[in-house]
Length: 157
Image (cartoon, rainbow, N blue to C red; front, side, top):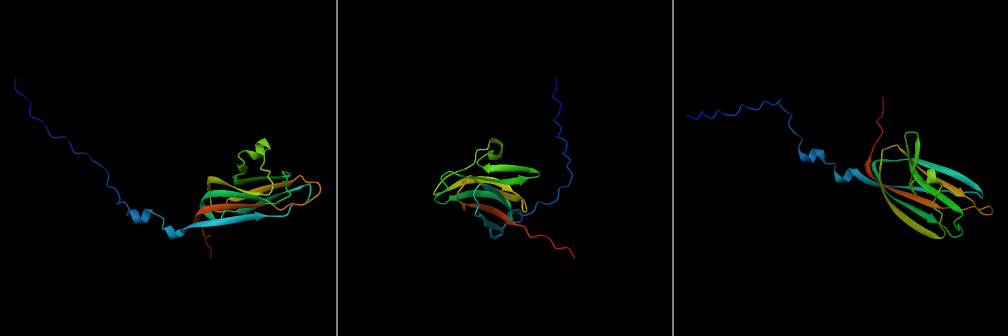
């Protein structure tokens, strides 16, 4: 029995592909990535609560949330930090604070928490502060550190 000759493989047909951009064009120049800090500080009258918010100046992520409780808060000042996602108020520190009613309440200390939470430019970052002290006002400070691209709104002419 004779062997059949081996036939060449048929050619693989592919649609023409556009050229890939150079890697340099895919990378964001380091000078465009910025660190921004948002500071929330307000004196809260006795037996009241406030909700503070500011839009994110960057498209990127929240790196850290830092909470400063001055002397005298004695766990009577509750704080939560989060973002607005669509129509949902999402707490980040402490996690699920709005659902569980477990807030951060300290005295005479500063604590920082790593966050690593994605954020869009213009998205609201919020802080809820409740002063349960029936005698004195208190002024906690909450600072959010963000990293990302600064988005400049387009002007319409």
